[in-house]
Amino acid sequence: MQVAIFGLGNVLMGDDALGPHVIAHLTAGYEFPPEVEIEDLGTPGLDMHPHLAGHDVLILVDVVKSQGDAGELKLYNKEEILKHLPGPRVSPHDPGVKEALLGLQFAGTDPNEVLLVGVIPHNTCDLEVGLSPEVQAAIPGAIAAVINELDRLRLAATSRQPAQEPDIWWEKETS
Image 1 (cartoon, rainbow, N blue to C red):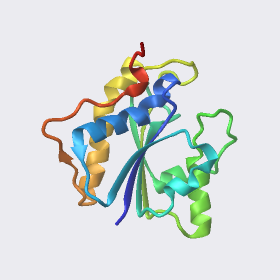
Image 2: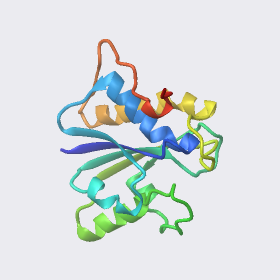
Image 3: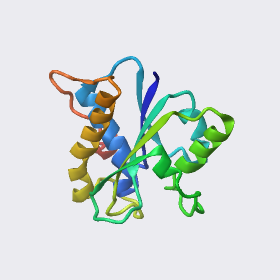
């Protein structure tokens, strides 16, 4: 079984950086079995297909447009993601997940399972570096959702001892 954990998001657009943050925390705090690929994809847009192809299970981490409060964790499976047709892409933030999954489905190469670990953002419209306090507070829950899914798949991640400091390179000051 090939599993991919992908973080999605633009590190320069406030809360849109959730995916890269979660990936940085996961790689700093855990070691993963060889069947698990983990990567920050950034903002692949409509060219997401090659990244998603070839995996039995996808775990995606991103901010989501949904009813609820900023920082609220939302989990969506493949059927829930594909329940409605894709809408118009109105911003570069729209990562094209539905379009990519539908394309892979049409080609007969779609993953068996998909879990979207989403968090409702406070702000993804302004050019700024750093997460809002609400989304920052949601990181442990997002990490737990990913680890729980791996446990369910019997591909347990092991905690690093000692844990490393996450490399949040985009928030570091340069001199």
